[in-house]
Amino acid sequence: MYALGSRAETTAVPGAAEYAHTIADFEQAVRLRHRVAEIASGGTLAVVGGGLTGVEAAAELAESHPGLRVRLFTGAEDVGAGLSPRARRHLRHALDRLGIGVHPNTAVTAVRPDGLATRDGASFAADAVVWTAGFRVPGPATTASSSSPAPTTARVPSC
Image 1: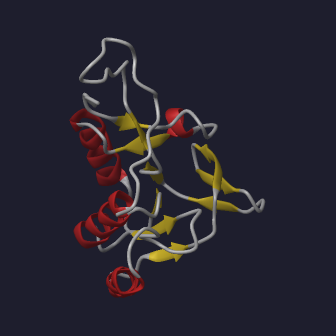
Image 2: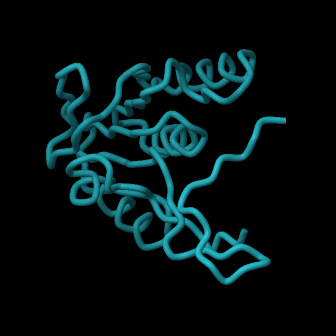
C-alpha cells in the first residue's frame, strides 16, 4: 500500500478542527508557534493524545516554554500505551521532570475556544489545545498491485 502522507484526524471530535492546533504539517506547526508566543506566562497548553507524537509535543512545549503549564490528555490508561512497561515508566518520569500534568483515562469529547471537555463531563481550561490524537491518509491510496482504492484504515499486526 502507498500512503502518501498523513493529516491530523480532527473530524471525530466536535470543535477539534475549528479550535485545536495540529502539528502534522508545516503550516499548522507555524500557526501553533505563533499562538503559543501570544500566551502569557502562567497560561495553559492542553495536548490531546498520549501516543509518541503527543508525548514529544508536550515535552517540547514544556521545555521551550517553561512559564506555561502543559497538560497531556489520553484516553488510554497511560501515555505510550503500546510500549513496554519499562518504556512507559521512563516516559512518565520524563514528563514528571518537566512538570507536565498527565491525565490518563481521560477521553476528550469536545474542543472549545477556551479549552476542552471530557467523557466524564469535566471541563479543562486551556489557552491552546494541541491535537495529536490520530492521523489519517488524506486521499485515496492504492495498493501496489491495483489501481482500486485501498481501505481508509489499516492495522499493522504486532510482531
